[in-house]
Amino acid sequence: MPGNVPETSTTLLRDLASDSQHARWGEFVGRYRPMMESFMFKNFPSLDADDIIQETLISLIRVFPVYHYVPSEKGAFRSYLTGVLRHRALKAIARSAKRAELVAVYADDRRSQNASVEDEDRVWREAVFEIALQQYLADDAVNALTKRVFTQLAVNGEKPETVAQTFGIARNSVDQIKSRSMARLRELVKALEKVDHAGFDHGTV
Image 1 (tube, rainbow, N blue to C red):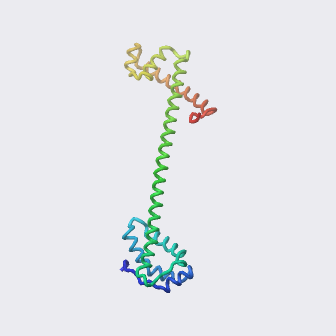
Image 2 (cartoon, one colour):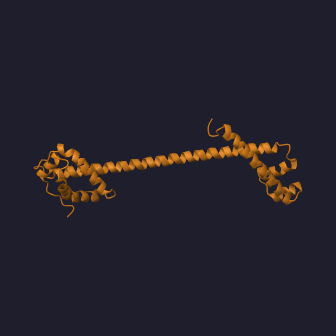
Image 3 (cartoon, one colour):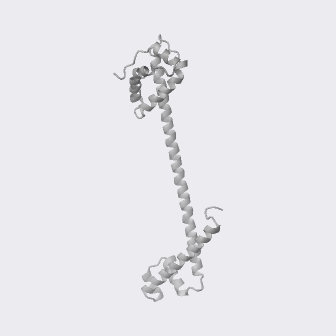
């Protein structure tokens, strides 16, 4: 069965300790991989067992030259091997948690930055429109009635029918005043934006 613990071979471990490229590595993998897979599936089912086992084998290549197997200590190598596996698995979990934390922090930061930029843009657009509106209402070339009608519509938010009744003009005239006024406002806004982009940055002081 995959979960069975193989008999530890002193000569096998000695051969691997003496040569990291020894041909007996295949024998070692064939002997111990089933046990390693069983350990991973039982204790760390959410992790990629193949990755952890591969990392463990690579680490064993480095540590075998200094590892001393004592045959009289039953289960010593098994405990040592599962200890390395556990260590590698816990490191993988820690890396995964750290990545998740970094991703979460980055996402929060991006959302915060985007929200901040959106807020700045909204405030800037509102300020530009307000300036354009003030310029329009201060323009002596615009008829006084037109200014009053547009103020009731755009600033006070009154319905066109109500404005028409208030000033005693046709509903169609109210619509025409609104259309001409909005067209002029768009021109003023574009002019202000050109000035801003040419010499100023509304996002900095």
